[in-house]
Image (cartoon, rainbow, N blue to C red; front, side, top):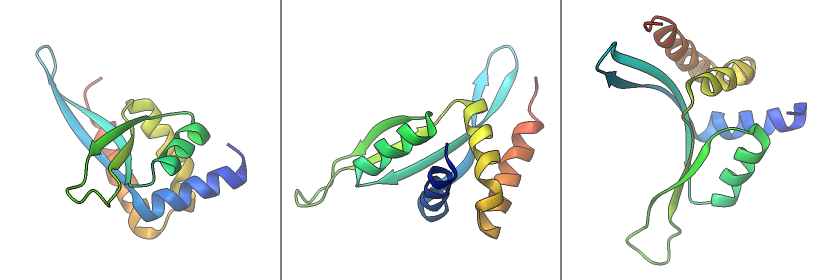
Length: 115
C-alpha cells in the first residue's frame, strides 16, 4: 500500500472498523483464537475498494433492509488470522487511542493462544 492508501484505510477503520477475537473449538486442541477485522457499510463500493487496496478480506452481504428505499448492508471481513494481525500492526501507529487499545487487546489475546 502507498502512504496515501494506508491513510485512507486507516480513516475507514478508525471510523467504522471493528477489531476483535473470535473462537473456534477444535476437537484436538480445544478453543482456538483468531484475530478479525471487519467493516460494515451500505456503500459496497467502498468495501470493494478496501479489499482491493489491502489485498485481503472477503465481502459478504449481511442483510437486506426492511425498507426497500434503504440499501442492503455489506461487510468486509479479514478472517485469516495472520492477515488480520498484519493489518492491525500496519494501521496501529495511525489509529486513535481507543482503537490502539483495542488492537493491543486483540493481539495480546491471540498471542496467548496455543500453537
